[in-house]
Figure 1 (cartoon, helix red, strand yellow):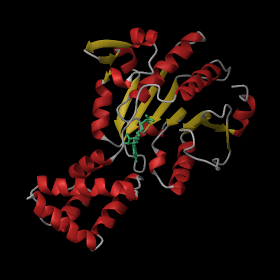
Figure 2 (tube, protein in one colour; figure 1 turned 90 degrees about the vertical axis):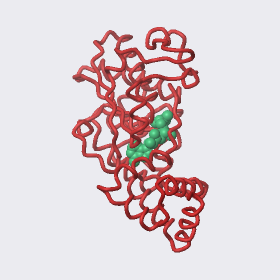
Figure 3 (cartoon, helix red, strand yellow; figure 1 turned 120 degrees about the vertical axis):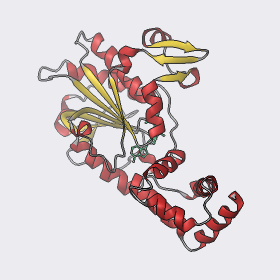
Figure 4 (cartoon, helix red, strand yellow; figure 1 turned 45 degrees about the vertical axis):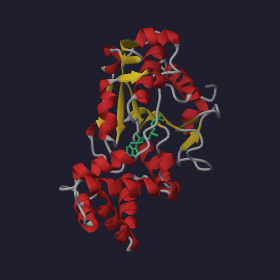
Length: 294
Ligand SMILES: C[S@@+](CC[C@H](N)C(=O)[O-])C[C@H]1O[C@@H](n2cnc3c(N)ncnc32)[C@H](O)[C@@H]1O
């Protein structure tokens, strides 16, 4: 059956069905299917048709793209396609910057907490928990009561399910310091660790597509938006459009952090890149002038 459906899909792809899939994926998720990922998409579509016992590529396309009827199948397909690679404290200089920025922000006279942080495209949660640990430590170090919340969002249901469990293999934790293992994780198996309940309680995970999100939680003004290694899968113009939207979600004193090099030669209007250059962080122009020492 798999071979027959493969033939059906190949025939259809000659007539441009493959392009319809690529366009739909990009329009709905922002993620571009580049030539090097086309093979993976083709194999996935053929595999799913085989599993569903479908011979008609046209039928599979139509039923999956149907927003209501196809929602479950669509979500599974997207889940299988996306690159969800992540780990704790993935880009160390960015977390060092977050620590400094938090200390400066929460000790400012006009700061009224709690501090809200958004980990966008958080995958299986390592990034959101790393932010929670960093923010908590930074607040304690400047003797400020740790009142903060982290929101982690990702389009992948499977990733968010894992994020909520908060259980990780040691291989994802090579950048976690010895002292943090003890303070923030419980060993729950061989080479298996769970984020302690105190930190898990700080983080709220949501399945959410940034291109279609209407959640009231995301509507609140954020102090820090941390979005790394997601925009690289989007076209340049789409990255700019999205970054412009994200700046609308920021509090006046807020900071937007991207992955290094994810947006070059362009800065959102009214914002400027902060020092140091080992990170890609933007704040509103007046804030940059005050915070240049960071
Ligand atoms: C490579 S991972 C990056 C994870 C983490 N931010 C890091 O840097 O380690 C990219 C994540 O972006 C998510 N993603 C892609 N398109 C998205 C969209 N339209 N809305 C929300 N998340 C999306 C993917 O599901 C994936 O988990």
